[in-house]
Image (tube, rainbow, N blue to C red; front, side, top):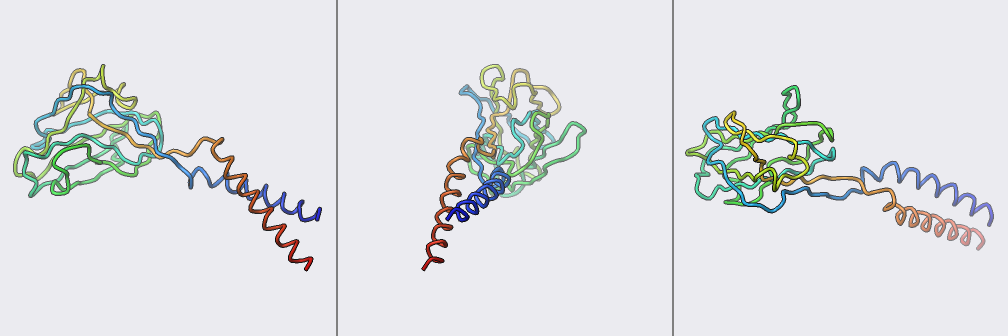
Length: 209
């Protein structure tokens, strides 16, 4: 019986080590960073070369989505796309996507970036431009910086058509996928140990019969 417990202990240690190595990739949780409540203003158009660009600094590496407030209620959505890009410090394009205007909701927070990995603490630019539209395209909302800036935007600037908008940040929500803190893995480790010891005892009892 002593050998059974020694074997179970060795298997448990090995299983727990493997689990702890894999857990940060397998077991994650979502963290959302949003603007504080404030009054909003929209830029009238992001079409015809009127590009909206927000500097931001991600707090974590894995970004599940970046949502912005879009109002497409009064524009034509029969044609055209919303071009979304993320560029780094040397202007390299790290994310590039086109969202058909026909796929946008009439208004509300809309995911324009999905599943991108960036370096936490570095500065990036998120640019939004409507192309091939029949009119001025959708309106994008922004908030006053001093009141509503989230952690990602508080050190960045918002530019529109190449001009800096004073005291303004994009109305945006950053959703991250992050691993659980180590203390949260303890119940999983205890469960692994329990299952291994239970299986080993069952094998020992079967061997005795």
